[in-house]
Image (cartoon, rainbow, N blue to C red; front, side, top):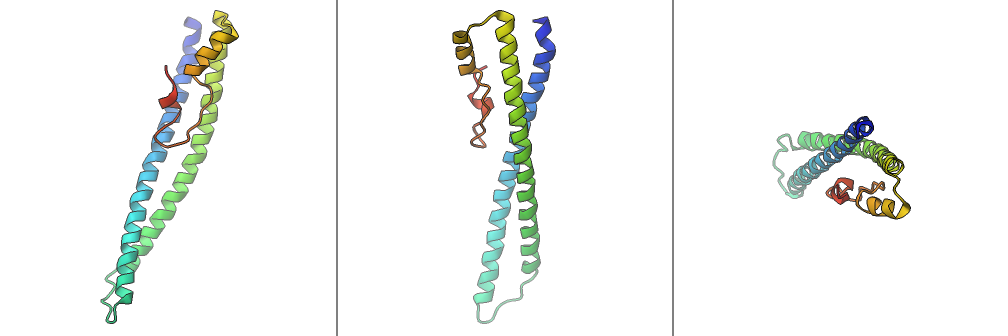
Length: 141
Protein backbone atom coordinates (compact mmCIF):
# COMPACT_ATOMS: atom_id res chain seq x y z
CA UNK A 1 0.00 0.00 0.00
CA UNK A 2 3.02 2.31 0.35
CA UNK A 3 3.27 2.81 -3.41
CA UNK A 4 -0.42 3.65 -3.65
CA UNK A 5 -0.37 6.45 -1.09
CA UNK A 6 0.78 9.27 -3.43
CA UNK A 7 -1.65 8.11 -6.11
CA UNK A 8 -4.54 7.95 -3.64
CA UNK A 9 -3.69 11.35 -2.14
CA UNK A 10 -3.90 12.89 -5.61
CA UNK A 11 -7.06 10.93 -6.31
CA UNK A 12 -8.77 12.23 -3.18
CA UNK A 13 -7.86 15.79 -4.19
CA UNK A 14 -9.55 15.22 -7.56
CA UNK A 15 -12.64 13.80 -5.80
CA UNK A 16 -12.75 16.81 -3.46
CA UNK A 17 -12.40 19.28 -6.33
CA UNK A 18 -15.20 17.59 -8.28
CA UNK A 19 -17.50 17.57 -5.25
CA UNK A 20 -16.73 21.23 -4.48
CA UNK A 21 -17.48 22.19 -8.09
CA UNK A 22 -20.85 20.43 -7.82
CA UNK A 23 -21.62 22.28 -4.58
CA UNK A 24 -20.64 25.62 -6.13
CA UNK A 25 -22.89 24.99 -9.13
CA UNK A 26 -25.77 24.06 -6.85
CA UNK A 27 -25.29 27.26 -4.82
CA UNK A 28 -25.29 29.32 -8.02
CA UNK A 29 -28.41 27.52 -9.23
CA UNK A 30 -30.17 28.25 -5.92
CA UNK A 31 -29.12 31.93 -6.08
CA UNK A 32 -30.34 32.09 -9.68
CA UNK A 33 -33.72 30.69 -8.65
CA UNK A 34 -34.01 33.24 -5.84
CA UNK A 35 -33.01 36.13 -8.11
CA UNK A 36 -35.45 35.01 -10.80
CA UNK A 37 -38.24 35.03 -8.20
CA UNK A 38 -37.29 38.56 -7.13
CA UNK A 39 -37.17 39.68 -10.76
CA UNK A 40 -40.67 38.28 -11.44
CA UNK A 41 -42.01 39.97 -8.31
CA UNK A 42 -40.62 43.38 -9.32
CA UNK A 43 -41.88 42.83 -12.86
CA UNK A 44 -45.41 42.10 -11.58
CA UNK A 45 -45.42 45.23 -9.43
CA UNK A 46 -44.34 47.35 -12.39
CA UNK A 47 -47.01 45.83 -14.61
CA UNK A 48 -49.68 46.56 -12.02
CA UNK A 49 -48.53 50.18 -11.86
CA UNK A 50 -48.58 50.57 -15.64
CA UNK A 51 -52.07 49.04 -15.95
CA UNK A 52 -53.52 51.46 -13.42
CA UNK A 53 -55.35 54.52 -14.87
CA UNK A 54 -53.62 56.80 -12.41
CA UNK A 55 -50.27 55.05 -11.91
CA UNK A 56 -48.40 55.69 -8.70
CA UNK A 57 -44.80 56.85 -8.97
CA UNK A 58 -42.33 54.06 -9.67
CA UNK A 59 -40.33 54.83 -6.51
CA UNK A 60 -37.19 53.24 -7.90
CA UNK A 61 -38.84 50.02 -9.09
CA UNK A 62 -37.41 50.55 -12.58
CA UNK A 63 -33.89 50.80 -11.17
CA UNK A 64 -34.50 47.78 -8.97
CA UNK A 65 -35.67 45.84 -12.01
CA UNK A 66 -32.43 46.71 -13.83
CA UNK A 67 -30.28 45.69 -10.86
CA UNK A 68 -32.21 42.44 -10.56
CA UNK A 69 -31.82 41.76 -14.29
CA UNK A 70 -28.07 42.43 -14.14
CA UNK A 71 -27.79 40.02 -11.20
CA UNK A 72 -29.61 37.34 -13.22
CA UNK A 73 -27.19 37.78 -16.12
CA UNK A 74 -24.20 37.64 -13.77
CA UNK A 75 -25.43 34.46 -12.09
CA UNK A 76 -26.23 32.84 -15.44
CA UNK A 77 -22.71 33.56 -16.72
CA UNK A 78 -21.25 32.26 -13.45
CA UNK A 79 -23.33 29.08 -13.76
CA UNK A 80 -22.17 28.51 -17.34
CA UNK A 81 -18.55 28.91 -16.27
CA UNK A 82 -19.08 26.51 -13.38
CA UNK A 83 -20.64 23.94 -15.72
CA UNK A 84 -17.54 24.05 -17.91
CA UNK A 85 -15.32 23.64 -14.83
CA UNK A 86 -17.46 20.75 -13.58
CA UNK A 87 -17.26 18.99 -16.95
CA UNK A 88 -13.48 19.33 -16.91
CA UNK A 89 -13.25 18.02 -13.35
CA UNK A 90 -15.61 15.15 -14.22
CA UNK A 91 -13.22 14.13 -17.00
CA UNK A 92 -10.28 14.36 -14.62
CA UNK A 93 -12.15 12.25 -12.05
CA UNK A 94 -13.04 9.63 -14.65
CA UNK A 95 -9.41 9.41 -15.78
CA UNK A 96 -8.08 9.29 -12.21
CA UNK A 97 -10.59 6.59 -11.27
CA UNK A 98 -9.64 4.54 -14.31
CA UNK A 99 -5.95 4.95 -13.38
CA UNK A 100 -6.49 3.81 -9.80
CA UNK A 101 -8.51 0.81 -10.98
CA UNK A 102 -5.80 -0.17 -13.47
CA UNK A 103 -3.11 0.16 -10.81
CA UNK A 104 -5.14 -2.10 -8.50
CA UNK A 105 -5.67 -4.60 -11.30
CA UNK A 106 -1.96 -4.77 -12.08
CA UNK A 107 -0.79 -4.72 -8.49
CA UNK A 108 -3.13 -7.46 -7.26
CA UNK A 109 -3.53 -9.43 -10.50
CA UNK A 110 -7.30 -9.00 -10.69
CA UNK A 111 -9.03 -10.80 -13.54
CA UNK A 112 -11.77 -9.30 -15.72
CA UNK A 113 -14.55 -10.72 -13.55
CA UNK A 114 -13.11 -9.15 -10.40
CA UNK A 115 -12.59 -5.87 -12.24
CA UNK A 116 -16.23 -5.90 -13.38
CA UNK A 117 -17.34 -6.32 -9.76
CA UNK A 118 -14.99 -3.55 -8.63
CA UNK A 119 -16.14 -1.20 -11.40
CA UNK A 120 -19.78 -1.89 -10.54
CA UNK A 121 -19.17 -0.27 -7.14
CA UNK A 122 -16.39 2.16 -8.05
CA UNK A 123 -17.36 3.37 -11.47
CA UNK A 124 -14.91 5.22 -13.70
CA UNK A 125 -17.93 6.67 -15.54
CA UNK A 126 -18.61 10.10 -14.10
CA UNK A 127 -22.06 11.36 -14.99
CA UNK A 128 -23.54 14.31 -13.13
CA UNK A 129 -27.06 14.14 -14.51
CA UNK A 130 -28.64 16.10 -11.69
CA UNK A 131 -27.33 18.58 -9.20
CA UNK A 132 -28.36 16.40 -6.25
CA UNK A 133 -27.22 13.07 -7.69
CA UNK A 134 -23.69 12.70 -8.97
CA UNK A 135 -20.74 10.35 -8.99
CA UNK A 136 -20.12 10.73 -5.26
CA UNK A 137 -23.64 9.55 -4.41
CA UNK A 138 -23.60 6.57 -6.79
CA UNK A 139 -20.13 5.26 -5.94
CA UNK A 140 -20.06 2.69 -3.16
CA UNK A 141 -16.62 3.09 -1.59
